Length: 435
Image 1: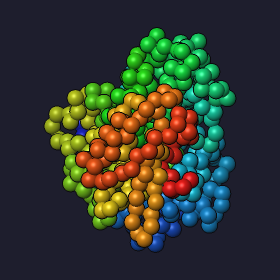
Image 2: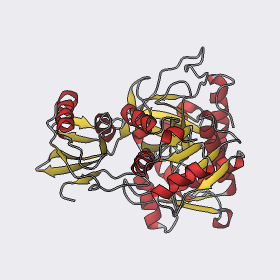
Image 3: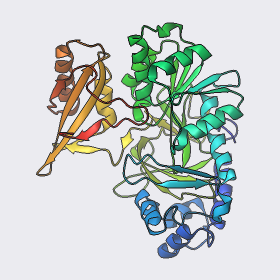
Image 4: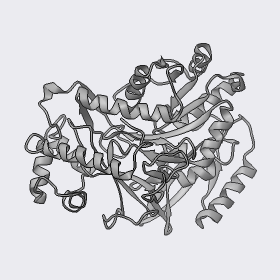
């Protein structure tokens, strides 16, 4: 497993192609899902070149996987080996539709652990660190992988499941945890509870916060908020999916830029409408092919993540950190399926969050969405960090920012402290109006 620092793009492409051809050669007829999919598309293996791969191999969508598991429950046909070869089962969160179950062999699990170790290394995490995980581990894959990867690196791993938020804060301090793994939302929540309980985080041993599960880690105002609340720590963003495992790590030299672990993935960026590759530097949908998850692979998987790659040449490394792996400017810009059109304006949730989180007086917020006669309207509720704080000026500022940034009049209403729901995993702040 490599970080992409040594060697050049030619060497990286050569390794990718070798892994890809090996992967494809083992799918037909062993993998029922891809055997049927390739046959329907008229695919003839082996593919002759990378260009042939992108021209002839069809995309894979999440809806196809959902339908496959519906037709052949509980795991579908995307299994390359007999069921007795699989030792791990996880499930997607279901925030964007029906949840998917995903199985892994020991070899696939090892591949993903190596990818998670890349995330830790890029964040400067090593064997001397103590890593705190403030969650009860259920079917969600991310924290299982992170926990095991940290343990394998020699870190002291501290589970925080079954504790209240206040007890988790005290556990972080008692154990001298130096690294915190959380969603951006819950890292903010931990800090707010610390303040409420009179705990001064300026004396906190945490020096690194690795966030995932939401786009907030690459949203500048959310990152600033986190680092203000945790003054001893730097925030490192990361993203992955149950279907593909860990995908990116934050650039050590450029906060807010994510590098794709290209030793593990074939990466494409396409226009979600035309399905053609976008020009370098243009935003589009991230498409991934998993090179090492042979037991349950994904070929040209449309992730739904909206990204913009930094153009790179064939000469010197494209990034100040020395890495040649693809850099995504601004991280995950949004979800293709989460973008909504409000009076003709394309709006991503991350853009709304950037405006709201620029006001430290706001503790939590909710976006209510109403669609009537094909017209979509937004209403935003904001809650103060401190009980009884007057948000009148903040509300006026927000409404002015929305008008200036999006040319939209968005009503903003203040609610009492403690009114809006709190979240430990992925926050669900966008709700139908009236819920």
